[in-house]
Length: 511
Image (cartoon, rainbow, N blue to C red):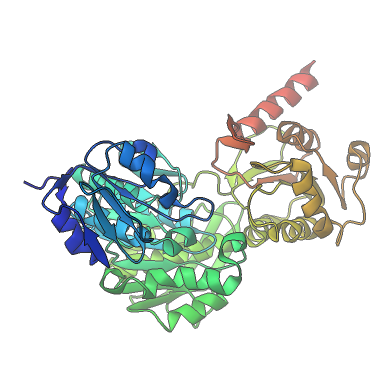
């Protein structure tokens, strides 16, 4: 009998409609794997082709470990006792097989997919709060963690590989979840990780330059995002929420089913008639096809008003009354690492934010400019082994919007941190004519940048410069509690480091 932990090869073949099948078909398989090191006797191994590694190289290893089935998209001979399933796309095959293996866990859940360069995580938290207040039991799979009520698992990817994703969905459904909120990355869309998920509602937040090292250009990146709305066939969402302030959002809107457009512009079906942004948060009067309502939130900045509009439009699309949407969003908690304040006794405002693209950094800095601080100090770096083209753009944005920029290391991975910083410099020097020494940064205080490669030391320095009325934005890592240096994953949390630096400064003053 088929269980959640086994399936007949014949069922697998039926699901995949392969190009060719060789070997036994009336055999049970007990696990699906894409990492040959995890293969046990009776497993199916899927040879996935990645950007760096081709899984077809590990078929022999999977066979040595007892794989019963090999699913591949490049022809090759196999032992007679092993079933070979030749498909057009092994990644898509893994997604479809995983759906079958786990009894299609998303078929009877309400599934919401959120895609876009920025805002996915914030919108997922807002929707989690909104739907919980409406009596649903949502599970969330995203950048910060994978969670359902009391369960919380560490996030390895924004969107996990398909078999891991559907295993999570099955686990959360078995625990009582009736809703799945899924952050959908462009990599996951391009790599068919979500092809086994049945979506009800898709949300598009925005599109700005990111991951161009992977996608090649902005148009290819956009087309990957479009797959959520137009490329999943019967599994694609019947309703869509699209932010049409974004130029790519406008293009996408014309292709979507069941469209609810949102944005700051009155052309959007869900938009603010009036809005007031302050240090305390956001107040707005929202116009929608379902009626007008007042929106209040402790989130800060115009970009968060856009995120709130996405969440509000989603709630309305799902049939919630405007009053319920307003109440649910007003009660939503702060989002970890998204303009997250760090308390201090200096009379300064210190915020930690995940902004790691030029657009996200620009929006975060614009949000804090609106608070009219005496001086803005921005601290940031760029990740290694990622799109180099965004580095000078981030430098230019930081210099344009800040009085003092502290350039430091982020997650350098296998790259030299100094080389990453050198890629940032041309953008900084479009605005600031030269780099300062630490002494000059202390004396001048405005209109320049300083380089402190070590992030501990950089945070110490930035905190040492704060005076009453100043604002410090520490950007790039947000909720992350680690730093990736070489092949090491070291504990590092900007919020902890800021508290440590503040204690050190207060202790020094007392002494």
